[in-house]
Length: 303
Image (cartoon, rainbow, N blue to C red; front, side, top):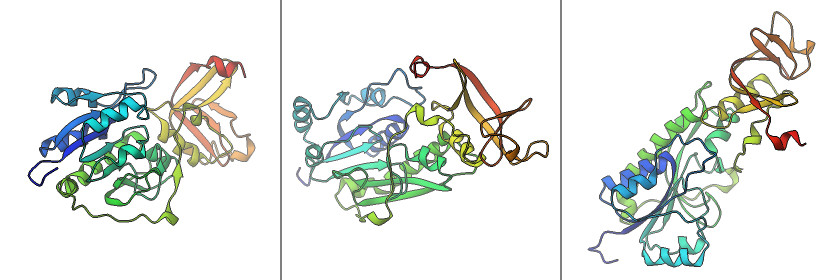
């Protein structure tokens, strides 16, 4: 790339953060030469806008490979001759050989205040753990996930009753703030780089629907945090109540006492009232305010 040419930008993106950040790059006149994204999962609730549609509407080539490790895919990436790479909520690890292609570097937007909550589903994990703050961090991509030098970050609060989805909307806005602040410096190769303190790092893996299973021996607050971490549009917290039925709990309220009775009078998981629906926990009760019965999955029936 000569000093007179605009850098060739290659974007890996998905979900609303991917959509907003791609839109912001285009607003700044970035020469986006290609967008890599994913096929939507038919088993996943599609609550976010389509990155592929945005790219196609701007005449940008769209790619949806199942793997970036395929040799033909890698050759296609090389042919795009990227000067800089951005990853905005792309779900797959980008191989080191791809990260080495651009002269201006490869950068990822992560939904936490790194080095805390490296890995998958950082907002869900933060809400589950009762955190009061999270954010968005733009960092360089290296072989190890979310471990590269930080460029910039923006914090947002987590309210005591906010769901993971509500917090994600805040993080989405924070990601745009960070990118807006740094886009010109990134495209000219002058963005700051701040090493992460690895001693402060925490890492969490991805979450599966089964991780929403409630352990009633936990505290009422901990169970409430789980519920707000995985309620709509996520699979939800649940308990298997009968042989073929599952109770999916979308919202509840932690209570320390019920009719002046301490939780020690009941076993964790015991239904102590139907109106209102109240279930004993390890240290109190949970009043269920929004729930639905579901048929137990066949695989669970077989166990």
